[in-house]
Image 1 (cartoon, rainbow, N blue to C red):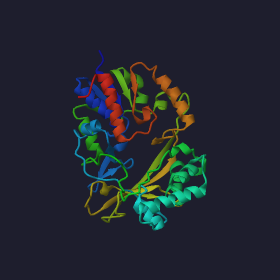
Image 2 (spheres, rainbow, N blue to C red):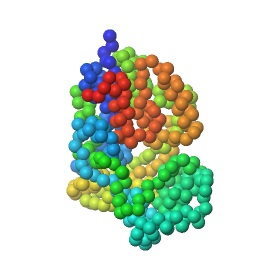
Image 3 (cartoon, helix red, strand yellow):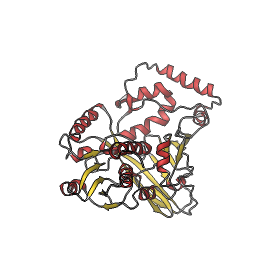
Image 4 (cartoon, one colour):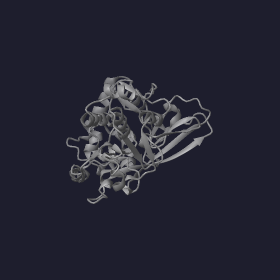
Length: 370
């Protein structure tokens, strides 16, 4: 008999949901994480009374009733609405693209005028078969919006010129001919009061958690502890990159405390010109309508990823898709190991989709949701 029914590798959302559900089903679970904290990339840390999103901004949003009902068991969510602002060389524009954006861009007042302006620019561009991201974006929203609000930001994000990026990266762009600047079309939206770390801690209440444990360095000994492993780390790292490394984009953060109550007046401001080195600035207090005397900001810099860096965004192009398929074939042969989550499935997941995927696993593995 082994000590545990399940060893869960990774204390992020996917691992925490499965561990909570397995424990509720009467299973004995051990959760480990190589970091010194739970919550993975949604980890929040209190600074000056402000919950700081250490690994980048996370806004919970979903239309999934089951996910909302589940996550609401562990936190109360505020009414935060994501309404980012774009800063293009000192000009401020509302995001996503809506009537406030079009009025500032062209002085138009009615939806018909805005639609006509976009259509005019699309016709002038004369693109029928977009060959790259640049042509795809112009064919969707015209040249002005592309030049000011898409081009520079995207090139910083991906580290390549837009005309060298594949068109499929932008399948569609949100264009609203209303004065609605809510970024998400979601029935439920908000930030857990007290931070995401508290949310995950509540999920893991009563469950044994060991931090600072590197599974890949102690795999054999750790596997011997449990009947099954739920692995949420990078799938290529699990196999020691034997087929090559999957590609990611990474992000670097510069966080500082400012001795002023308000730096930019909004939680997120995107810098869409190419010259500004950071992609956006997050002012964390506005996620929770803070009234603290100080403020905390984080500048985000997109960067190339190398083995050992924190992986953020999978590069889901044809080459990496083919490589992942080969790793997935290896994973399916690993007896007693379940691969899941953003890194285990090499897939960009919103938080609600992570929770839904974990609940689907619980139904399959545990016979239902509790």
